[in-house]
Length: 458
Image (tube, rainbow, N blue to C red):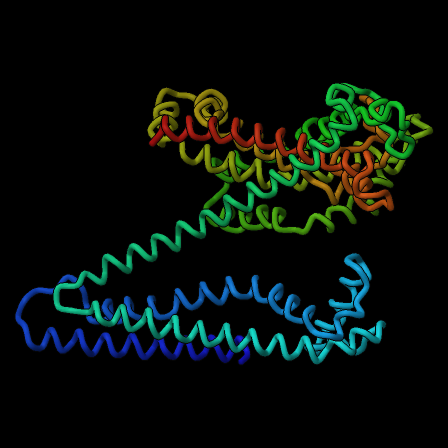
């Protein structure tokens, strides 16, 4: 039985349970004048949930366990005795046979896969019928049990709310557990890296050259300070020099000077910048801004100015960050109580004086929080620096010079042909863990600042 047919049957049982329970609840109301805590639809929904949810959970669990059961049954067949010992070739033959049995392949490279195809079809059909039978029996049994609980005084509504609360809790736990899994995978691979390279050499070393790693002293070529400096220089200095003034001035204009009609048009247009894919910014940086920056450097007498410069990547990254700064500053300035602005104007201050001495100081915590969030967004950006910055790890203050970032190096390290357990590849996980810790700290600081701001004006 196909999965779609099985789900259709379970949904049909749920509908039958809903109708049956509702009819029974209506009959209770017809025979009594008492007040009921639940409507007939609540009673029906309660039975439908008990009919569908346990069976759906079983199908989800069965979809993970049945492939292993099918493979174990195939391995007991006489034809499976010809399989090679455990390894890549054995797994490839079994995978080909599985794809042939499920009609997901047009042929097999190994003849033994075609021999095992009937065994896979038989085993798959056997366990599909077992799973379907158990799911239908479970749906019928739990639905019948829920139906027996439908009576005049049964509080079905509170039970439904409890089930919905559990579903919401499960959705929250999925997001949390996913984050924990990501952090755990980073930690596991980073620990493997730090068993090879001392953590001090990695965090404080000033020479980054992963292409040439000495077996005697691998830490001598994996000092990440030039990468941290490049990331800070591009994402937190050059990008913020562009993003903070333009974002702040646009927020001041939209909240204090723009007519309501102009604001309705300009704010959505400005926020559209945040929805532009980063690869588009990368093309803009590589094809337009980088050549212009190189020509500017040559015109200023910097003959060695490169088209892969920190200035080109930082400028475009700053343009990308403007909506973040502008949106946070706009919300913060607009949230300042109108009485403070009106009081300043009533005392004879001009509009610019009111903005400089009243509104901006009052909105400063929110503005600072937005800037910190924008910095964490900038230092995690990958596509622009891949297309506009270079791969040369240098520690320079010259914006026309080539430099690189942590994210650019992670891309380079993971797209090479090195073995997965080599120091070069594992360094990417250590860089990712360091970047994760930095952005996490910035987000915590930003959120604490924003929280303090909200507490002051709520």
